Image 1 (cartoon, rainbow, N blue to C red):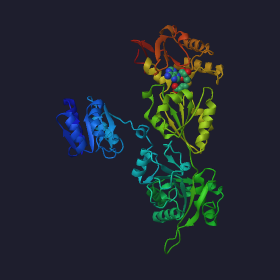
Image 2 (cartoon, protein in one colour; image 1 turned 120 degrees about the vertical axis):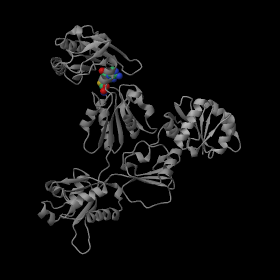
Image 3 (cartoon, rainbow, N blue to C red; image 1 turned 90 degrees about the vertical axis):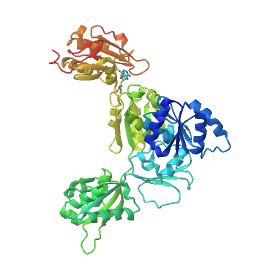
Image 4 (cartoon, helix red, strand yellow; image 1 turned 60 degrees about the horizontal axis):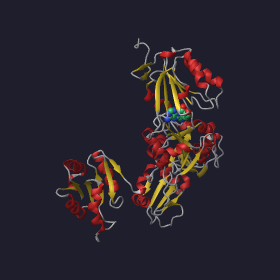
Length: 576
Ligand code: SAH
């Protein structure tokens, strides 16, 4: 039973609504003096929601907690909701009393925000079921141990790029501790609560005669895996020869298994060295192997993967076999997330970026960007922060760590692909790692929202930094943008050592624009505490107002200042 205690009219309204949402049969509304109500409800209910200030609630609870009968393991969980329903605070009994969970339910029902302060929930232990892997086993028991900080044994951590895990999760926890097993092997049921995470590591190569029935292929796939001690839930894909691309039984088997099929040409298959070549496919298709060669090729492009099960034939009763399979294991694939943090303000960091920061076990970035998001990282995450100028080293080290099979987040301000880390990293990265990009709000966009609507028509960004780009190239691009009447946003516009480039670039634009009538927006430290911006004109701009934390946006011939805002019309015709 959930006891609801309210002191004011607004509180009683909220309590009634909450009871509706949680199910009136599960709730009891306490009327009358709140002290009395809290005491009674504390004795009668398993959980309490107090529509009272936390201070008042703490005072009322204190004597109850000091009493002999009070017990941390059995006391009710208590949630407080403020008068204007902004917050649902888990006050007491976060885990065992269920207050954390209740706060989340109350918040959802009343459109409030849950406030949860117990360490493990606040730092969000990764949900074992949120990693995108098939999961089985005693999720509840293992998650509880994880949250309560009890020892949890981790087996096979190196087989999948896991996020940073709390310190209580270790390979050398006692054997009778709740266990997480990562991998693709069949594990016998044991006595300890165990969660299995199935890595997508198995590829089955399939050879099939024309008309081979799906059941025959399915039976053979299943037998080949389980006889070898492999769990079918780790199946990543099937592979075959492209002569079989329309084979109904093969396609039906893949659909039934819920995995894709990759097809290779006979020439591709023929290049792979296999243990059991044979003459039949050589005559029919032009490759001495289908099942083994396709499994090996699909598992890794070089065809050098580990063959776990050599070619094996089906054994249907009373007729010739129509299917062969072989099983190969894919190498561990690291994960590189390239994450844009936005221009600075926390609320311009996307939810997806947040999720990726928590998905990582290593974060690589410029020290000042790491500081910007340090509080969002999981405890135990490895941080590789380096200073300005170490861009290539950062990119290379992020890729190297991912190649080691880790979950890496490479961070950058704004969008990490705009004058930032994504391109140097991907120039180094091979096909052996998974790459996930998370877009961020780039400086030009953040500045535009501040200035008005300067990017309403075609526009470009140009970096004025001639550290990596010869000035002639930059100048050619500025001239092209000027001639093409594009709105231009300059990144890296000016520093102490580079002060002549901006005036030069503006002069080129002025050759093609009416300088006194062309709006120019200057936006510095957008969305940061020292944010500053101004709309001026191409004729009046003072370069001294521009530094390295600034972008400068210059209008096209149709851009205008309207009520102090920089506006570029979407078209030319309607404007006239
Ligand atoms: N990846 C970043 C750009 C890096 S280049 C992005 O997408 O925004 C660095 C330049 O970006 C700075 O010299 C400045 O011109 C611009 N910049 C970055 N953050 C900014 C901010 N908050 N306000 C204004 N300009 C910014």
